[in-house]
Every structure is written in C-alpha cells, then in structure tokens.
Length: 573
Ligand code: FES
Image (cartoon, rainbow, N blue to C red; front, side, top):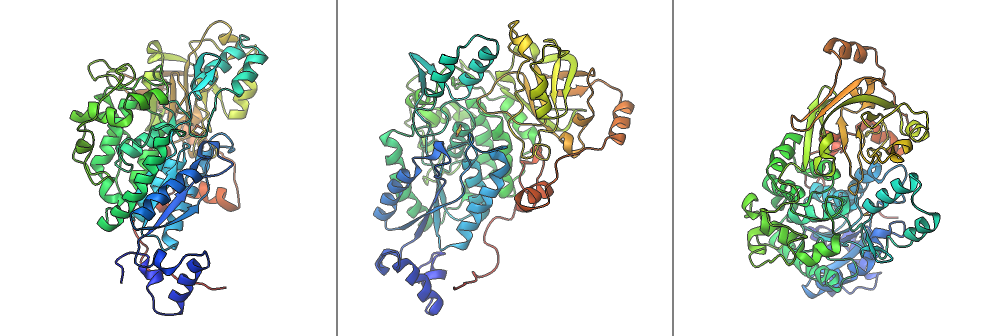
C-alpha cells in the first residue's frame, strides 16, 4: 500500500475504491498514471475575472511537467479567485471564503500535496491560510509581477503613480487625453501589480516564510524563467510529499519573525500585517502588533521600490530579488529556518549576489534606517493601529490637529471636494465605519483624498486616520487598522468634528484629547451601527469576523491545523 493520503481513496479493495479509480479512468488516465504515485493538487486561482492571475493556466502546465517528470500525478483544480480591481466592495471581504475553499478542496480530495498558484493581493494569503489549516505538503508558485507600466517614455507604477496622477487631475493639471492614454498604459501584461504593493509584498513574504523555491516571488509574469520555476516547483512538491515536509514545519514562529523582518526590508504593504497575523493564527502562532513594532524598529528598509522608493518590480528582480534581500539581511534573520527547497535560507543565499545596489541597498545605506512601519496605541486605538511611517511626511509624524469627521465613506466622497468644507492642511481627516464590520470587509478607504481646494493650493499630504486599510501602493501620513473599529464600539466612533487629535509616531501614540471622563461618557451613550445582512456569506462574515489586530480571520478558523478526525464519507449519485 502506498504510504500517502490518497491511498485512502485509491487503494481500497471495495466498490468505493472501484468508483474512485473509475472516476480518474473516465478522464482517460490509465491506472499506471495514478496508482503508486503521489497525487499533486495544483490549486489554481486563474480566472478571467482576475487579470492579475490570467496566465496561471499556462503556469499550471509547467508545474504538471515537473510533477510528471518526478513521478507524481498532477490534478489541477480551481477555487474562487479574488480580483483586487473588479470585486466590490472589496476583495478582502472574501479572503476568508477563498481560504475556506482552498482548505476544504484539499481536505475533500485525494491529494498528497498541493502546489498553490497565486498572484493578486488576497490570493496569496488566502491560499497560505487554507494550506496551513490542512497542513499537507505545499509549495507556492506565484504568478509574478506584470511588466512595468509605461506612458510614452515614462515608467508608471501600479497604483502609486495613478494615485499621484489622480490628485493632479483633481487639481486640474491632467488632461482628458492623458488620463485616457494612461488607462491603456498601466497594465501591459498578465501578472500582479509591479510596485511593492500588497501582491508583491505577499509573494515575497511567502518566499521569506520558506514556502516558495528561492527567487520565485519576483520573476516577471511573462519571463520564461517564471515557467522554469513552475516546472522546478512541480518536481519539488513530489519530493516534499516523500519527505513529508509540511507547512507547519516550515512556517514556524521563527519563520514568521523572518517574514516580519523581510517585510520591513521591503518597506512592504501595511496589509501584510493583517495577513501574516491570519496565516500564523491558522498554525496556532500568535503575532501581536508589538512583535511587528519590535522587529521592524531595528530592521532597515533596503528596497528602493515604489511606493517607498523609485523603482519597479522588474528592476527588483534584475537586482537579485528576495534572495538578495535575504542575503543582505541575514545577520538579522534566523538563517537556519527550513524552506520548501529542503535547505535553509542561509544555504539558499550562500552564493547570491546583488546586481544593483541602487535598487536593493546595502544595510549601511538604507532607504529607511528602521521603523518604516509603526504600531500605535492610545485612547483612540486601545488594541492598536498601524502607520507606514516611511510613506508619511516627516513633518506630520508628530502632529496635533482639529478633527474633520466623516461618519461613512459615502459621506466623505460627497463632501471632500466641497468648496465650503471647513478644513485646512493642519486638520486631521477622520473616517469611521471602514473596518471589518463597518465596511463590511475593511475596504481600502484609508488613504482619504486630500480636499480639492487644498490640492489646488499645493497641499499633498495631511494626517488621516481610519479603521480601514489602504492599498499597498498608497502613501501619505495615514493611520490605518484602528482597533476596535468604530462599528465594534471602538473610541473612533465617538470622535466629533472639532475635537483635537494627537499623533506621535515616535511615542507610538494616537490620542483623542478629551478627558477620560468625557471619553467614558461618550462611549456609554454611543450606539454603534453597521449594515445588517440576514442571509448568506455576509451574515457569517459579520457574526464571526475578528478585528484587524487579530488578522480579520473568522474566529472558528484560528488554530488546530490538520485533518479533521473522521474518514471521508463517500457519496454516489
Ligand atoms: Fe491584482 Fe494589484 S490588482 S495585484
């Protein structure tokens, strides 16, 4: 009997085993194709609704080549795919649904190991969460970033350059013609956003966690080496199954510390904080915000890629990619952590070189010496908040200003450009009800637009605070992920127009400047509200979602990885 999980399906000497084998033979396979071979699931987030992952069917073909060559039996399957650009109100609302899809598809099927094909922002954490919960051998094959955007001779970064151009357009400085041309110049191929936004951050962190082959994260989507990496990953998953190396042996508490340091070195997306907490939670590992603050504060940001820096992901790859970052960071990392390659990070980067020290800087010449991201607390954020300090205006990192409050996103959109809005550049813009419950799904509303009348006067940044998230490609003095959120009864919900708010990043504080008694009285009389949904996924979401400081996972999915303790029940039609 084969030692693998799939033997429970195929090695049964009864009518149930007969039906399982007959099902594969109906696809045209002979028993020699699958009997005695480990079965490799290729978990594909391809979808025509997701332009970032549009090439993943072709990547899957390359994975299959490797699996066959190594003596495995590949079976590709689809899950839902989460497209950042097309999903409303936000792809984040569905991250946990996709994670459940991945987990249950693996659980229900005769799979001994899985290759995870991801790319767009939420697809990588969702697959890692689901795979961590099942804890069968896995390897991640990212789809890679798209080609650099280019308008005429000018490189254009996903998100980052578009947000900047949008502000210029609102200030009346960008013509209709240029705006229309940009629409056709920004996304020039399949692949995910080519700034160090959430997608590039999360695939890089999959590599830092040890869940990809070395160098996999940043190979451009259209580069032939993307397919060579996929074939190698197909070969490697067969060995991983034979060696029985599971995600829980790779994604250890020390591996998460490595990932946090690499996040800091990349100057990566704030969204990664939520996703890392959620992935770790699936393995029973606690990652408090204080752990991020502790590790990030003494890790230099060495990656000079938008939105923190100048370059784009193609240049990052040509400079050496994540292996070059890990090599430079190695004295700060747990180099002996195992990766899915079967070797350690230290072994993997032994001969790695950096080919462009403008793009991946030495630690002695960082983009930011440490603390690119800070975890804040205070009476406005009892359970925490985050700010990407490296993307903020230095002069605003310590600031007290008058609150201009928007109760809801729609209200903010209606009012922000009104000429009579009572606001100046010293004010603090406050957006409530953008959190996990309030959104719902914690949309990327946190980079509140600068009011048009201030844009016209040349103002490009203000302090903005919310319980929402922002795109990994965004920038500005933006406090995010305030927890508990307004809709959950957090103090953000009782901020009033005209209140004073103090941000002090050095002291890691965010405070509403009212007395404790006043705050207590306001909270006592406050009745938070959020939209109710009585049916379907929304109702489960609102009932079981955790707050941002706990990764926005469902409470019933945290911890306890592995098989559920029952035999598969077989149904027949
Ligand atoms: Fe898919 Fe940016 S929209 S990664």
